[in-house]
Amino acid sequence: MYQIVLLRHGESEYNRQNLFTGWSDPDLTEKGVEEARAAGRTLKEAGYTFDLAFASVLKRSIKTLNYVLEELDLLWIPVQKSWKLNERHYGALQGLSKIETAAKYGDEQLQIWRRSLSVRPPLLTADDSRYARNDRRYAEVRPGDIPLGESLEDTVHRVGEFWNQRIVPLVMKKERVLISAHGNTLRALIKYMEDIDETALLHLNIPTGIPLVYELDDEVKPIRRFYLGEPEKVEEKAREVANQGKVTE
Image: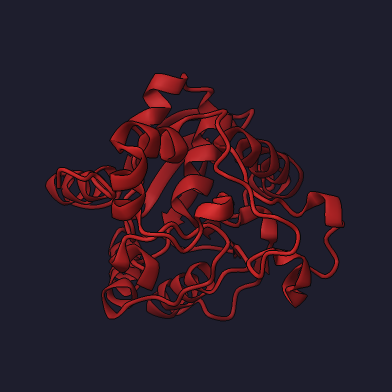
């Protein structure tokens, strides 16, 4: 049996302000830093250690990983960063208030943009300042691969490809791997690994800063997944994610 640990980054400034984030690059809040450190302590207390780790190229993912590794005294292990672990690209919604967007378009449309599998958000235009083509961190990415907005299905495709090409070979070598990523990145990965249906995916909310452990069979297929932490706390934080942007809240 193999194991891998997934972790959604700690609370970011955009999380705190309830804004669509996507490929925007806000920093962690003080709460987010503490969530990351707490995740590291939880992993250490449970006896976990790692041989290498992955992060996206966004600072909330990178800093979360660094705080976790510091708590584990593992800052020395190799870390690989990839844009393919970036959050789902929210297109023209990036930086907008979820509450204001819900008030304008309705809760139902907001939830479709946030949680549906195949619907893309309103897209950026190539002349938008938020378009990532001019960002140095994506200089080696083919222009056609840099999105103007993504559906969750698009994210499933890029994350699934990365999983098969980069992570599965390491897991099969018995490497102990930690992935620090994002809410929709991890939802996409779970969709890819488990092939859960769209209804189940709609209600899948990944809390910030709580390690998610996967046990995998000899073919690197999921046997089970579970969070490290008190179930009540996990449920409370998952509800917070689910309620983001509701006008009625």
